[in-house]
Length: 123
Image 1 (cartoon, one colour):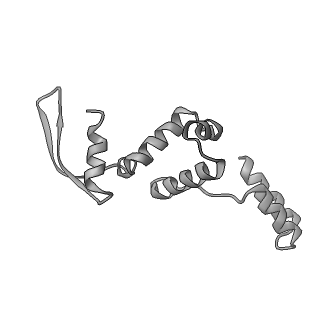
Image 2 (cartoon, rainbow, N blue to C red):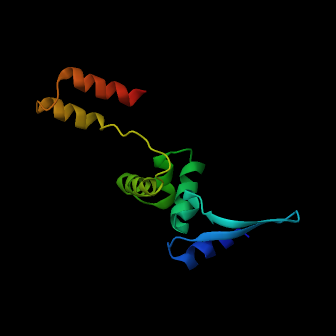
Image 3 (cartoon, rainbow, N blue to C red):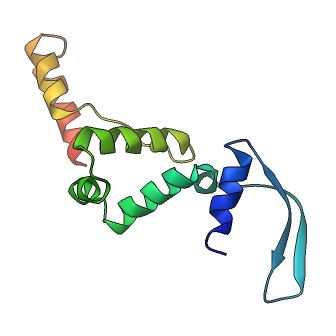
């Protein structure tokens, strides 16, 4: 059963699929209709494994670097790519601290605006 989802993901090749029948194994209950897979189940098998590893590492990018043998930017890029596929949760993104300071230095924003952006990051 554990490999069934990987096989299903491989067979569908990332195409949209609709589930038409659901059966509860230990009961005599079946439900028929048109059901989409939840967003996490729509990820490729590799991305599902990566996301599960990230959760198991408690979000530690350092542990992910060790586990997968890749660099910090590679981990961040993959997480960003996976996150972009999961649009059911919208997260307001804030500019990086260094980016805010560079914008302030270039005169693109005021000191008050920089403080506001930096305070938003700590919430």
